[in-house]
Length: 249
Length: 344
Image (cartoon, rainbow over all chains, first blue to last red):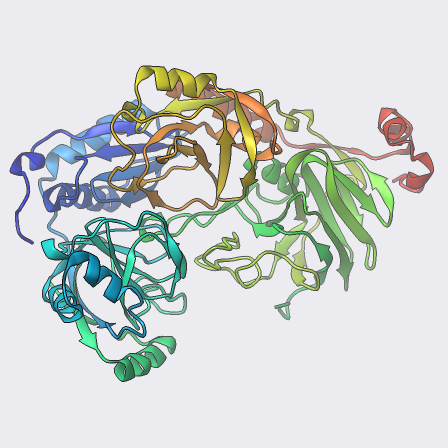
């Protein structure tokens, strides 16, 4: 990951924000930034390895870690003190990040908004796809729906605003761009983003040993496939096979 | 869907929209984008479960104002109902809104929206044999997780049940008058993004008054009232959403995010409703008018502790006798003949 960001972000003390009496937000910044996300993931890993008493769940997002806790078991100020200490000892994320190559079909039959997005970005269809395939993306977080991954590292020419109003539901496995980011969305949902492709991979599959394939901190690339290959891989994925390729960092 | 080990079955005769199976929630997967779901009113859910000797977080039916009618098959079932003041009847005979009773094979228990409240809970002495998803029965219909094939309960569903004993008097009245909770003031802890609003907007937010909109479901409660303006724009880089978070999107109309909320989101969250008061708000019907009051974390935790203490004392169930039924309850119902035969 390139260090395009402000190195000072790696040094600032986190802010502690209350999300009610049972959730604490540990905020390292307010922007999409790999260094900030590194700190979130580092704290997440450290806390998960040795969870403080009374904590229930840790939810890493782009720029903060949400800690769900039982306030009848741990006092808020005690928790802040513990987390501050842990945050001061972890300097950067050195996790076990996996690099995934995700097959993606950009055929307009599936990439419903490809031409619309290309027009807005003043690119040809092929240029848009080539730029999207060339980049390596960082999984900043999972959220919104089960297994949905939010990716940063979108090339500048592909940074498109969200739609002014949402479009009808996209199919499962849609690869979307919007708000300067990219997401892979395993559940059918309405969206304000643009569908530029579809992966046959199932990022969430209940019957698989690893129900969730990708996690925050992983890297991800897209490999273009044609419609015939898509249909084949889709059937294999439906049987529980993982059709994405995986390489440990 | 009825497993071979099931001893008894709930057969659903009719069900309005929004009736689902809920346990204490599918916890531990927020980091993968999985919403916990779980009961809208966790206090009432716990009361119904405790009244039949279950763990507080056991799986129960969450009944919406759409109502439900069901019967027992293969064996009688001990059940408890608690929550809002719903209108209950057993084979046409009216019952109080919070009861424990034996549902005989072929008897029909009908639950309809009553005087107040939006949700009630039907717990059974025992457990449901419906398959779990990620360790939980909690239904999240938007993603098709949990419940019966990931959906709400519909007429014709059969829910397998393995029974356990219940020591509560049957029929009995659940003595929990504190389930009737006022909704005039809802307490919040400000933040996590109240600094996206100027002081006068925080004041306007607290003062309201707010009206519960007719548009709302298990995911969100929409509020009608003053339009709030943002001091620093309304887009933030997505972060976690806690239960009860109040987000303010671009149109300035606050939305309370509830049991089926999305796990993350990108609108500023001006405040978070404290857990006991989120249960209250969940029971409020559209049109209910209220204000917010900001409290400290310490005050919020004290309120939580008070709520926990109500459950820790145990749920009192008194035998439902003719003497009870001849009192104000029956006068209110004006249906004295309808309930003879309930002496224990």
